[in-house]
Image (cartoon, rainbow, N blue to C red; front, side, top):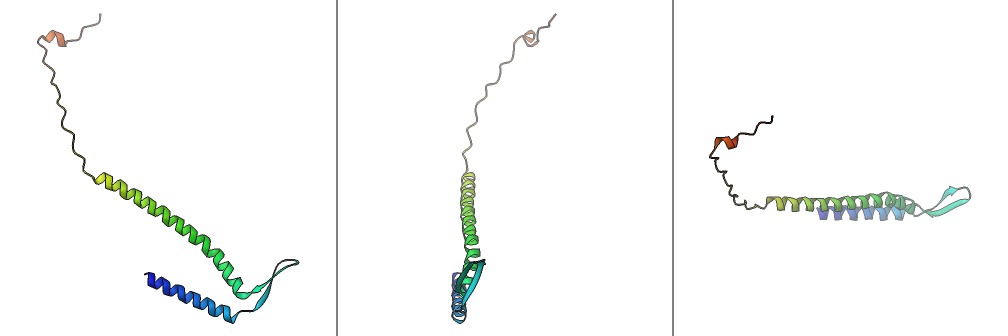
Length: 111
């Protein structure tokens, strides 16, 4: 997949170089009344392209970094949950001794 990305990047750069070579003409860009910017046509193409690409690329990198951290945390949680825990030994329960007199089991009556 990296080779395909590299080939596409090289083709894009070659196309940009060819475009720049054939369109290297000065143009005047009137920003406000009295403010004129004289530049070449390729600059007018490259700067807006980068202005749109760079913030989205940075947002993509941030989301990718956040998802990698989240996946790592979930994998660690799953790994610790998958470790078998030894069962605790049963706690001996003392059985109550039976009362010898049935009168002791009865509750006293309130008058």
